[in-house]
Image (cartoon, rainbow, N blue to C red; front, side):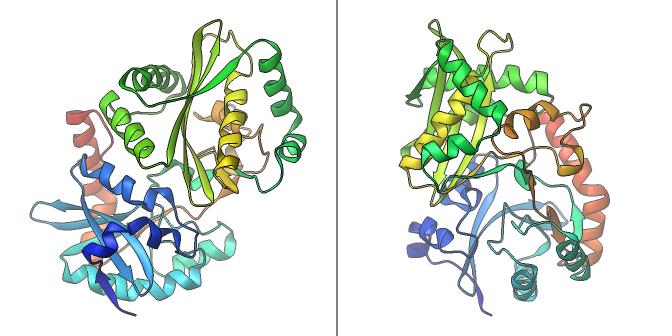
Length: 347
C-alpha cells in the first residue's frame, strides 16, 4: 500500500477526499480544522495511505524527533482496516523523522475491538477530542418523528421553553456575536470544570467555518437577553455540536434544549443524517453525579439515552523506546509547561 504526501491540487480539494473516507469523513480531519491548528504552531501534513486521505498535525520536539497527531482519524471504522494501515504509515513516518503517531479512529468500543487494539501493539493514551464518548442522534427521519422519539425529558424541556417565551436565532459570526458566545462559554466552562481557549481562538474558529459554509452560530433569548448559545458544524452527512453554553442563573428552563432543537432543524436543512452532540461521560459514569461532566451528560442524554463509545486514543510507536518515554513522561511534562506558559491546551 503506497503512502505519500498529497499534491497541491489534492490539498486544494482536501475535504472531498476526507468525505470519501470509509467513516464518511470527520470534521476534525477537514481542511478548516487543519488551518485552525496552524495558529497553534502545528505543521500540517496531508497524506494518502492508498486511497485513504489522512490529515496529520506535526510538531517537532527539539533534539528528540517529530510527533504526529491524527485527530479523529485515520478515517476507518474497523480494526481490520486499521491493521492494514499501520505498517505503511509507520514506515513512511519513520522516514520523516517521526517517533510516535497519536490516532483517534472512530472504531466502536467493545471487548473485541479493545482486545484487537492491544494485539496490534498500540499504546493506550489520553484522548484529545472530547467525543471518544458521546451521544449520537440519528436524524434520518422527519422532524415530527425525531421529536416523538426524543426522551420525555427532552421533549418537555423544548416545549416548556417555547411556552415560556424563549426565542432562537441563527446569527452571523460577527466579532460582537463571537464575544457574546465566548463569555457564555467561559462562564459555563468555569462551572462545569473544563478548559477553553482564548476569545480570539473561538472568533477565528467560528468565522473560519462560517466562511466555509460549514458552521453556524445560534442564540436563544428571553426578554431580549441572550440566555444560551451554540455553534454547530455540518460536514457531509454528519453534524457536530461543537460548542454550547448558557447563562448560569436558570431563568429560562429548557433554553438550551430548544436551541439544540433549532440546531437539529438546521442540520436537517443541510442534509445531515447523523448528529454528534460531541462528548459525554462514558457509559460506566453517565449516572455518576460526582463525574465532572455529569451535567453535560444529563443534558445530552435528554436527546438520546444511549451513549456511544469509541476505542479512544492510541500511540503507534514508530520508534518504540522514544515513543514509550514520550507517553510515560515527556508528553505530560510538555503539556504541563505549555499550559502554564500559554494557558491553553498543547493539542
